Length: 440
Image (tube, rainbow, N blue to C red; front, top):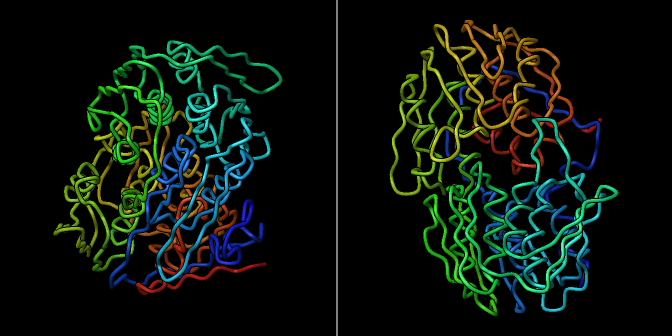
């Protein structure tokens, strides 16, 4: 039934239901066992947006149970799709019928909750010739303007106006264009790719982002009938088609979640098998972790991790894929705070992604910020303390720090964690961590 999630009580667990929820972690427990990687949030969101391009039903599998997914499905409802979600017996599926979409506006109430709402811009302008989306503005980790999105769509024949906090974009029909991106923005690449699949003629996107999540989106669109080549490279070529059919598509594993659990073993010590992964998606991170002294082996879709003793300091620079991911920077910083020696972490993607530093210092970290670089002198131990999560990856970083700390660490504002990690405390508890969610 339109506008209803089934079963609503199981969607995203009870994540984010209580704003006063906190995590309490008693550190000092080694992690042992096997943990399964969930579907990738950063693939699920654009793929759900892409269902707007189809006039038939799409069934998306391996969708993670996250707050961001719940918000995005609410947006699809707002646009008039018939959407249902089922999360039972580890089979997570969202079915979307956008054959009769009636809306073209992404309201501020939803965009402020999830910046990825901007991903409906490309599909809506391609499908119905109009989109009105609340401007996302900045966020805790830095400004992420949409000028690249608008410039690309304008080259394809769209016209837009920005007023009263909204961007209103219209077209009588998109046409192919050659578009060079000044920066390989992931969401911009995704938006332009989705717009181009229904445009007349051929579109070429140069300096495109290369992330695995974009490759997954392109493959799903091709399964629907799109003509795309070059996915995984910095040049995408799209030959527009008149119609996209439905599809049944399973989302790739979440490389950031897998990387976070690898680093959890590095922080707490232990031996883990991380299943349902694509190890090659983490080549850059695994290389740095091996250099720091972790033992990591890959076989099929599993990553085997062993860590004991103190790690060695390693410098890291975040870069677009296939470089070291910005979404693992905060977690890696935890390891370097406890490593032997001096390390430098340079953040090249977001200008304000060191908000976790102040909280790590509360646990005993020795960190100095100079511009876009964090200079870290390793300490022998963390001591538990109350800390506050400031954004999604910072919250994961504080969980890892709590696992490594002596004593009790209490983390507030954990709604950030629920945006990107599926049942993280349950997964860690199953591995031997002493971690509990407190609801008051």
